[in-house]
Image (tube, rainbow, N blue to C red):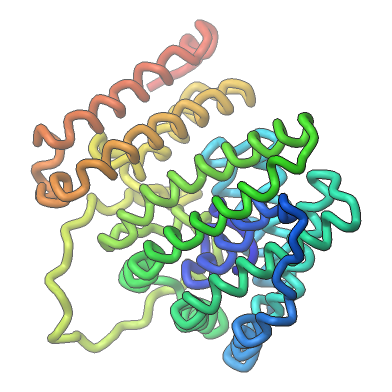
Length: 375
């Protein structure tokens, strides 16, 4: 567990699983409400120490440079999705700060994380110590249950960076499938920690805690929706803010064909080239592509900062609603071939949300902006 999530994340999926989990736990972590002595952090050394093995695999990776790339990617993803309120910014800044510590030093990451959370909720020294114990207890248990999968996939993701190899949709599909059970386990840890912290906070910090948890939850829903796409082989660098990343923009070296490979899953149409940034084609049945429409709309009408914020909030809301529908109709949607999704009844609620996005965006430009616009 380490750095962000909410998406806390959005980059090295194998590594981000760790990052996502730790920030998620940290955002809800707290002292034991009953005053019981927490698990001694020293009792979980094996699960944390196992991350030290990553260092040998990453001898060619300059972590300071990589942390800067992670920060830029996180900032891109946060801005793109309209995660701009105070709780959102706190999540992003703590995630990026924790990420400056190399992933093989997970104990240091957890120490920094819990320090920032204790400061956030104004915990006294005794409560802060119990907080660290609670986080280490949950982190240790989580890693004992899931550490093998995290380290295996995290090493693969990080070694690719060390070698200067761009990620592929095939790799991300594999990591996304590993992510699902880890998210379920992580949420159980968050619930336990949340039950510990909230009763011990004063009213002001209980309200702040609720705001932080709402901030976490919206990114969790976003990850849930995107993970389904990634598992289907539809990952794109823009999903993780990597469109300008120098490593990601290198050509993928050719590989020998694998005769045992599974039949490929149909994917959405390829992205159209852009002189500045690679964006997915915007199609009504695929919410992961809708942000391309928002960016094009902002540019077309030269929206100001307030209008852009509104546009991105509208986008985030509708993508969330589409994700909720997709989760409850997953098998039905998967059974529809890509060419039929533009007209199939199963995708009608998603296409209707896209129409709502267009209508609500259309209401934003002023008369002057509309007069200035030239098709």
